[in-house]
Image (cartoon, rainbow, N blue to C red; front, side, top):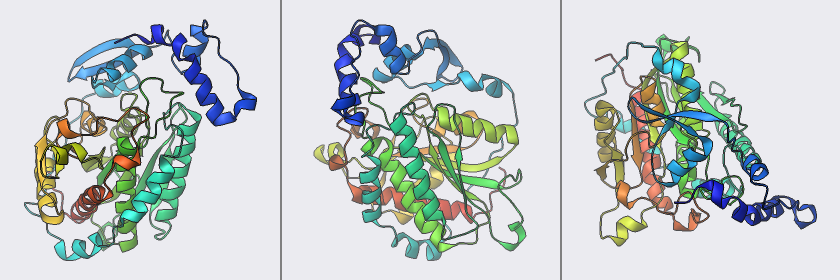
Length: 404
């Protein structure tokens, strides 16, 4: 694998191509191939900046931004803890909650599952992938986030109790939080800043990346993680339309900068920890649409349930939700440390879980490139993930989450 220091001059042509795409040939500004420093700056890479990453629990390393992307290209997972090392150093008692022994609300949930619509997911994903890239430091990444915020706001408008807000980040692409409050009589006074209510969080990440040249090459990110983004958006649509009286607040999160080391989700869960917010459960949906490798291998279509570096109790309940409400089974699989935003919740002391489109070895191999396109995805498979998302949010929103 070659260092970016060697490939930057050769990729100046690609930078020009992206500039033409965004501004037209009449405004093309050539980038000198010999000016590596300028090009690195345009790429958003500061050669002097040192970041602290965690490669495994307690295993940290100082790296440059360039070295971060080299690790990413090599398939090495990490969490960039630079901005939150003090928060993680502060110890706090972790609360562990018990989940229902079995799903309890089929009579409420099954009719709502029928309202999920693949046409909505397809329309949203077509628009979402039309942004040139959703790289978190790019102007189109910020633009895509603003579009997504408008969609979440429009979806939430059917229920005045639901609040939607961007979670502001310094890099320009903001995360998004939608908060559905509890509405049972004894919980009606609980507001967003409550430190006693147990939030049920559903997450996906909104950013994409082309690892060859993040700022300049096209990165549609259809599967990673456009699929998860529109999957939970569709579940959110049905949930807010149902106006179910919850016991626990339910939140939907769309994280920025997952590809940069779980930066957006860390900012949110570090803030939640600092504010004393309780999280009863967190589920991450990252890559929900690719099944071709599974089917080509003669395997049965299934939901991949991650079993490493997750909460075992929540994961066990998710398996029961899949068995009860989905039309396909689950398969247990592993993805390593810090493989998606659920790791940020775990790092902050919250119980989290992660599901993916298949066994990890059969997941999409076109991610982080120009080929991560809608045409390779199955919206019927994404529908199964939407069913899981909606059912889990409703089951836990209605559950008595007691400490173990």
